[in-house]
Image (cartoon, rainbow, N blue to C red; front, side):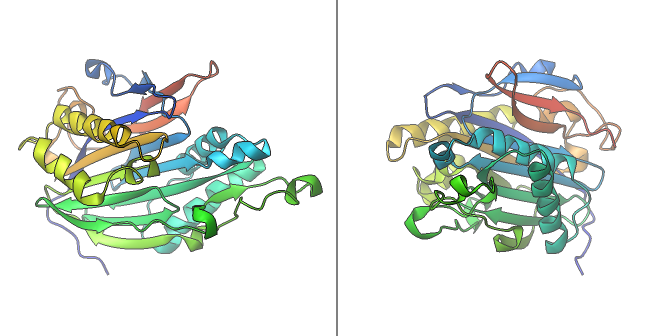
Amino acid sequence: MLESSSVHINLKCGWHGISKQGINKTNCDQSKLEEELILLSGPYGDDVAFVKQSNDYILIGLSDGVSGNRNHGLDPYKFAHTLISSCLEETDRIIGSSSMRGLVHRAIRCVEKRSIFGSATLCLLSIDKHSSYLRSLNIGDSGFMLIRQNKLIIRSHPQYHRGSSPFQLSSLPTTQSFTSNTTRLYHDKPSDGEYNEHHLEIGDLLLIASDGLFDNLYEDFIVQIINNHLDDQYSVESLQNVCQMLVQSACHAHIKCDDILVLLFCVVPCSAISNGEINGNRKSTSCSSSDSSLSSILVNQNEEESFDLFIFKDSN
């Protein structure tokens, strides 16, 4: 039984990303984020993410489409996007390992029903705002870090098959011509993912990112960048700047050319944050479901093939 915290928590958030083609974009004009639906330019290749809040929980998800899909005529971005969208549609209050895995299982079924084929990694975080508990489910080599008082407390473990192929959720065609040529595509299950629970404290920092960050930067260097450049107030602007520094440092490492998407969160008391501040402006609201202090964020792609980031409020 998880103990309840006397202080309800919330998050401040910053993000930045880049595609392997070298096009990058950070947050948009933050003064516009008070609207219910905002379109932000943000080309992050095959990396897709969302953040969703209700009265009781915050759910964060990041998926990275497996680039090897293209060798089999599949679209890794389309699969990752559909998987993340389905997770967003299937969200409910998550109270343990079975419900997190159940959510992912339902999301995969939705992807299969739509006949969207491909595979992707997935890192899913659920935060109970009342008990201050973080529940994590990680499948593959995207992942998260928990930093407390300048020290790395938790790092999810990347999961690989032979040949460095990451664990991956998939929906694959069943035709004989396809199944005879898929030696590097895997069909892992939500139950194969790494599940953990952790108690959060005020001032904790949560970083969730695709493997493009972790393949290019050592963990201690990531922590060093965050500690050296994040201001004492954990301002949204500072969170944004740190995300940008992390992405730039990973690119300059020149170890592995890959898409990179980084989201950095700071845990704060619910009363200490406004609806606007978490998304970069200063519009004041209470911490209720009707005035959610954390909007729902979804990295998406529009019909013109440009990469976009959608912000919209939880309607619950």
